Amino acid sequence: MTTPPLLLAGALRSPSRTAEIRSPWDDTLVGRAPLATRAEVVEAIGAAADAAPAAAALPSHARAAALHSLRNGLATRRTRLAELLAREAGKPIALAALEFDRALFVLEIAAEEAKRMNGEVLPLDLLPAGEGRWALSRRFPLAPISAITPFNFPLLLTVHKLAPAMACGATMVLKPPPQDPLTVMALGELLLECGYPKGAVNIVPCAVEDAAPLIDDPRVRMLTFTGSAAVGWELRRRAGNRKVTLELGGNAAVIVEPDADLAYAVQRCVAGGFGYAGQSCISVQRILVHEDVADEFTRELVAAVEALRHGDALDPATEVGPMIDERSAERVVGWIEDAVVAGAQLATGGTRDRNWLAPSVLIDAPREAKVNVEEVFAPLVTVQRYRDFAEAVQEVNASRYGLQAGVFTRDIQRALGAWSSLEVGAVVVGDIPGFRMDHMPYGGVKDSGLGREGVRAAMEEMTEERLLIVRQ
Image (cartoon, rainbow, N blue to C red; front, side, top):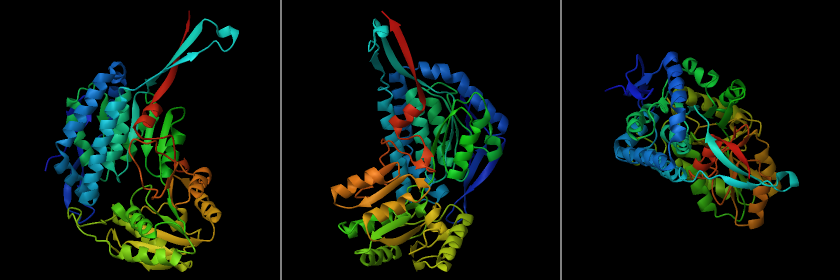
């Protein structure tokens, strides 16, 4: 069992320190991850700063070719790396394979977008003073960029930061998640061989205290962070005048209207609430059901949840795996117990075995209960009934989060009303808030984030507009 090297300053370097990576399913040793020192993090930032001119000067066809090379190299390793991802993240193998395929799609889209960094010609003769003058706008990459990613989609969310940076000619220092960095580290060799400038991308897993230069070093032009709201907004405060994008948490809500296809709504809410043990920022958490169909919906939902299969992440039949660690499962059990004491009905679940939490459904939990107010990030949904659509919208908007929301209805007026009034980054009509295509603009409002991801949107975040004004 070998330890993968750091990708640092244009070379693969053996680390001086390592950390054990153990399976969330059975605690077996999956591998050893390298750990960069603070000095190596600083060195990585210096390398990315030094490589910035070469990366920015790289022509669009060369950036596209580098991304195609990275995508094709990753594709040849799909079977082995999807299995590694399943083992280190405790993610069912079917979902690990899906994450891998989505990462390949992001790289493919980024290669196309690298050729479409368009500018604009602006007329300036709107007033007499502008006669004989015209302007061109063009976007220039910010570099270096610091990127910090979470455990729940380690490969996909890494690629969501790396691919647009390469597409626009930026440089990056990436800190992968400490819980499951091994799949990400496999990118190192591919990045060295893909044709992007040496030193332009550095991958340095490290301890939290050693990551401070990623936020504080004055050479860093931008920070892109995906993780919890508490950490994200603290990093935003520390970042000062640097550009920051934050893709943070949520407690995503679903509204189920009486005209909805209930069987489909149940199927999608189960998939969205319990896939990867609910460990997604747009996982279904709060389900608001119209009182006319609430009893039928809840009955079918509980039956479907109880039929979910759990087990080893490498078993293709497994639908719900473990949570990332035992502490997370303990936290959620405590929140469930608090909600029941406050009057909620536990319809199913609520028990745990180490870090496996039984898929759980709470009915009529008080709106101030943590299971409704905070981000659960677990295989748990709450169900509450409402009388009219305006009441449901008000309940969704009462949250301090606003990432995405789902609305099951066939009424176009209801759909347009939801789009106008729900305080979220995206409204998904006829499906769950967990629906995402990786090329669409993605991000939240309120405590759920700042800026947008998705390849094209991220490229705009990672660049700055500059005008050229010419007098004829």
